[in-house]
Image (cartoon, rainbow over the protein chains, first blue to last red):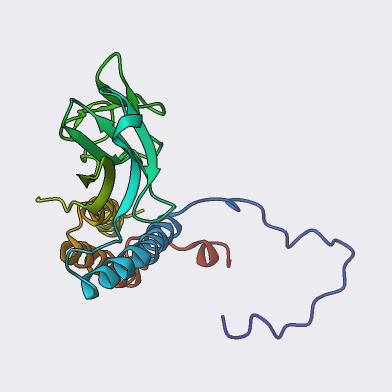
Length: 174
Length: 73
Ligand code: FES
């Protein structure tokens, strides 16, 4: 081992004698374990952002109040119809459904599976996600079929002066 | 050639736990249980040093020599 490197190479014209290709690509036990440990590292790093946002959310806790936002006028929404809007920020698309004369429900309509926009199918009285055919119950937001497991986050609405307003995002009571 | 699979099995178990925790983190985050999210994220991070420790401890176990040693002579 120690004198491996200080030998003077002998004279010869064979330049391939020291190329050893056997087992060159072999994945041995050690290499495999190295991969596994590395993958654990990748997982560790990839959860950090989630932890960070969660921590941020914990700091500014409480029921977040957003400015009330007008969605539509009552006369423009017929029973059984739906309206798309954005709440609380313009990047959170949401949907309002008028289920009956006085019953309005609203949800953030990013599917809880992979965030495709869920839309309201009047004929089937159901909210359907086009991506993997997830279905949601319109009166509660609970998933009824397909891959989604979490209910859609509900939005509280208020009817005032013949107009419909979005008030706040309901928290899960889990 | 003597085999030692303990390290491999342990590391595979750790990776499994990593996957489970990651999934839990994402779900709990959307369920707005931020405390639990932090807990699982923390566990996930902690698993990495544990994996490194197991790797360091186990890499020279077992009768099969490493690639370099095998090709010395
Ligand atoms: S994204 Fe809605 S079902 Fe997959």
